[in-house]
Length: 274
Image (cartoon, rainbow, N blue to C red; front, top):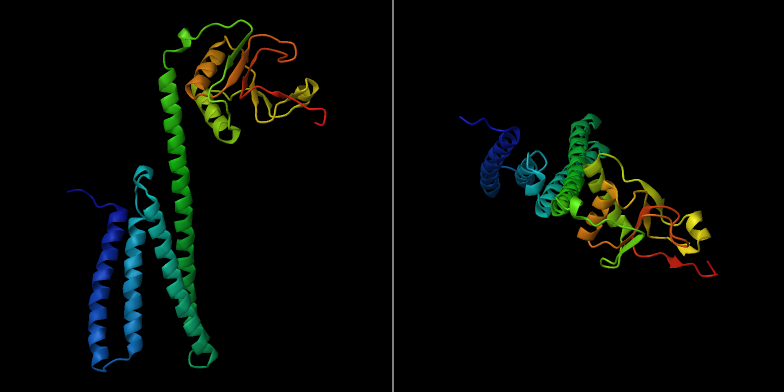
């Protein structure tokens, strides 16, 4: 017999609570209609049913063992909304009880268990919001992993086919390099391939580039020689992602002081005003 998971057990318990709350609501509704109990009891029964229904939502989401690939925006919205409703209902109970205390109809200690329950529900709301952020981060990481895997697969077996360079190679790509998006992906792929960090020698504007009269903003220089295994791989990877680059095998007057790979479009000339 297959063992029941903790999340499944929680959901089963929540569903049982819904069933009991529905029966209790029907019973109290009948009593209210004949005047046997006050209408306030009907409101309490309706709130108990709503709590049970929201608990069932949390059991399926906040306490579930769903994988990131099975998580959806709809689940996130349902989870946070259920947690928020539970907090709101309890907040109303605390406020009502406090009014009775202020009017002298209840003792102060009667509010304490209600306040403790409110604190518990607020913690669960924080957990729900944290899980949304966690799942969002996991999903983003999964997409990054897929992108890296796809690029590495496309490059598999190409290293020995990459042409040797002499001097400079220029690849236009799609004409743009979005550093905030592209650099992190390139760094992750390089680290996976060579088990070390991408050796960036210049990220954006530097005093050297200004001395050369070049606007290097939005560009990145990597200290790898184009004909080394790292350089051959990086050139191929950039081509696969259609990212423009310049590869220098040696110093080139006015352009490069040493062998490296420049990621991004070519650096423009600084104006006199710069």
